[in-house]
Image (cartoon, rainbow, N blue to C red; front, top):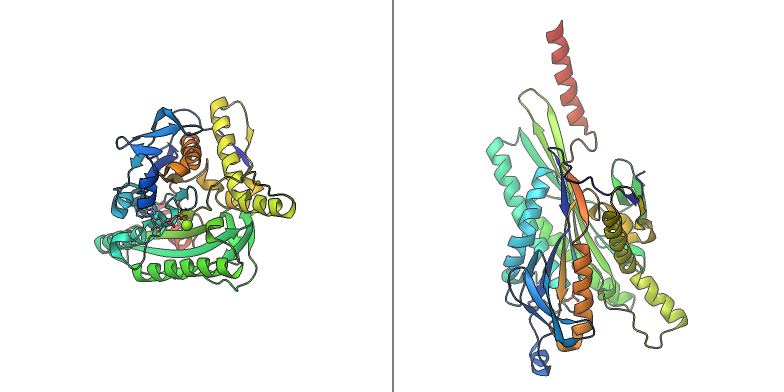
Length: 393
Ligand code: ADP
Ligand code: MG
């Protein structure tokens, strides 16, 4: 079992296969709707590829700040621009055995689902997930052809789940067995009982995304809830098995998480009390904990290696499951989606501040080799050792 405390990274450390890397934060400003445009000036504006200008806290127009991020995408950014910037690097991580994750954060209606999934029926409007799978299978075909399938073979397996009020639902099999969150030395955090689907091409991936999205909508309707209050987690395990001339087979595996978070809007002091308030807290518990995890990680890094810091990964399902993506073994990108509408100035500001904090998290991604002690890999190693023994005689 891994500790739930963060060990701050050694400065300048890194072996050939480990890289210490900050969480990347990309801001995407959605286009203003006609009525929003008519209602007043935008609360946030892109200034350059990395800079935006936003109303100050409390919607102070006269105190507009310039804020810097890894990237800023304006209203004119196409789905493909987001893919080139955020999706393509993730595909290369999957090919080389690095874990990766993309989180979409922001208030309801700011463009999270548009960014992560998009409109599946319209090629131009498809979001990150379908584009990532297209590119992944194209790269797999390219690599397998280059080396020959007897030398190199990839496999891809996916799961798709939803977290709503701290309950887990399998989006591929909503009426399936109950799901349990577990921690395992070899696998890390995982959900037991979740349907795992083998995916062989981008059509399979598209069918899986479509199936998950439809179940997310219908599950929300059945519970008389709003899908904007649930977190959707599409996970994908990419494994490659490479047979060397020596007969040694090596396995690399990477895990990719695509996370469409619940709307980040604050619980307003709108007279909600008692049962209603408790419900609101349950709905937001994963998101609140995500904020606390990030705050603790940033604090741990500020204080340096001397202090071991408690990071409350265990306090929510979301952070427990995704602990590797936050301060652990993964390359992580957060896409913070914001609305430019004057009426959303407060939420936009709070998303921008969350994004600024997240930028400080350092992760350490390593190339995952032989993680599951694959039988093939072990047979390969055995053959290799036998040959060495033969030579030694
Ligand atoms: P969220 O998932 O954050 O609640 P959605 O992704 O559903 O928000 O977006 C709300 C609406 O705004 C949808 O109709 C979506 O198509 C539209 N929208 C969001 N972002 C963009 C964008 N960048 N370009 C065009 N339309 C967008
Ligand atoms: Mg959504």
